[in-house]
Amino acid sequence: MNGILANIKYYLVAILTGSIMVLFFISMAIFITLNITPIMVYLSHHEIFGITHAQVMSDYWRLMSYLQIPGGSLHFKFVAISVSGQQHFSDVKNLFLLNEIVLVLSGFAGSILLWNKKKKHQLWQLMFPLQGLIVGVPILFTILAINFNHYFVVFHKLVFSNNDWLFDPVTDPIINVLDETFFTQTLLLFVILLEVELVSLYLISKHQSSSSV
Image 1 (cartoon, rainbow, N blue to C red):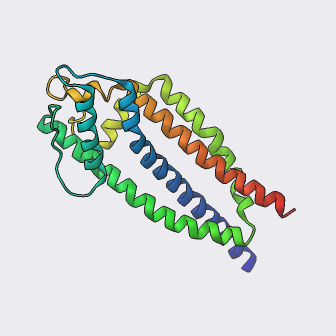
Image 2: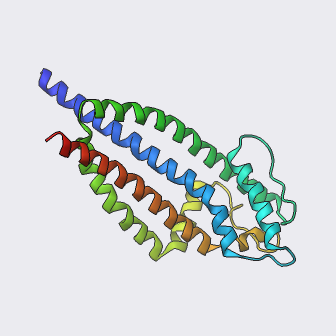
């Protein structure tokens, strides 16, 4: 009986550790991706009629601050924005703030669990699930990229309870900057970052496994 309970505990801890680390890696990749997007916008040189690229960047930085800092309201200085556009960014802000909470909590819990596994020389237990994720993530990205617009629409319909995400270029010209190419590149950046995180943990686990032999 004790052996069965020990096995159950072993698998539960392994599943818990893996789940928390996946949450941490995903939330970290999202956080980093979001904060790299100003570079992408700067290099893209997308233009809005009657507004300079520098002015677009100025308002984009306002958007970045709004999305990541609790409270406040969104007001662009140069780019026009509608009430529905402001509401959508408010909904997006809630998602990013939730991501930041997940990042902090999963990072704290994950560091404790990983430290315990490192002390017990059990990091090798993570190698197999990490291998699956390292292979699976690019495959999933490829599937999404093949018909990106379709999955982009499906995602928004599932996540948002309104149609405020359907921006009109006339009333919300920011959509000329945040176009399909921008989001495709953002998804690619997210996948690359996630892969780097997964491979890094895999190499650390593999190194400990080799050292303990």
